[in-house]
Length: 94
Length: 350
Image 1 (cartoon, rainbow over the protein chains, first blue to last red):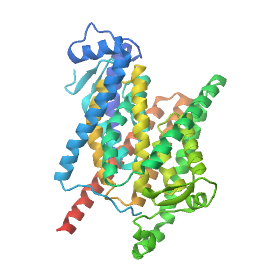
Image 2: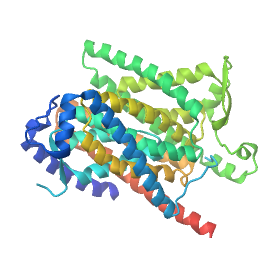
Image 3: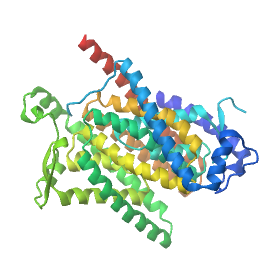
Image 4: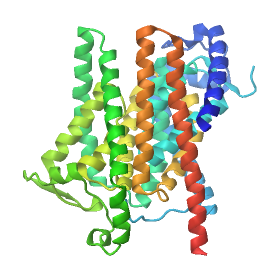
């Protein structure tokens, strides 16, 4: 049942996204340079960094993933502990 | 404009935030629970939903790196990681991966290699899945018997392991011998360990996958690790390879940072939940769910292969439905088991 429910959702969602992408087909092609004229704020900052310094972009991506991953894991862990799902050392049974 | 759509500046498309969080959550739960990266699921999903293939390959690596940090920390706290074996596996797998990717490049010059890779993929997934299913059902009498023998020596050591393949490999006496106390392995030839990881690395490079789904069963069936330690140790390999992949793909401009950021919100939470669920699901239960997952992943590759041969888009959609449908169904099963078993444990404590 879960599988069937998902199939319906998937067909619907992929249909919507694909139709949206047909309109924006020119954006979906892979380019090494981002057009910045229509961008502002964070999007502009990312685009300028992506266009100008790819090493810096790679460092920022890696650091952001590491920091966000650790932070979110910490808070999720707190919530799970509060729900009584605390973990400790396991005895490795099969 | 849809209320939940955000603009992704690097990919140059609009995308639904909820869909990104959902994909991230699914891959996080499966990653934390099975010790795999999940790129096999996210890459086709993102591609089907409109990502260019270049971003659909690079972006999940950044996401997998972020989600694996917390999951590795949690598995470490549960004593599920054999660091010594993990580090050997990383170094050796990288060498095998490099050889595998060079073989692919050489074959590509000779002609279309995609079909060969997909058939290898189908064969490997089916063989692993069917064997794990067989192992699960044939070992049920053993499981019941071992439950009655709580005072048995091996149980006193806190580890229950061993199977036909690993026992045979452990009996090969080619020095130097190496032990892995964290996994309860007293002595195995270092050459065997290196050869096994070289082959898994080669397969990863040859098929262009992260390798978590190959390493996890290899750790169980060839090296002889208990399932939960195989999950944690496999995640260590996934963490390091994804960190490298994240950086190198971002350097090539193939990571959509905004999408990775949003997916990571779901993935980080999912990975913690998946890793916690390992505490409640028995080793053989993990193996059964893993077998189901890779058998369906094999079906989706079959659908993808038919699409490549016939060029009928329905088969590509079918491949996506099988992948995401299987992933979501497994996530629901894991969540239900987690909630029910944690409630039962709390009742027992009271």
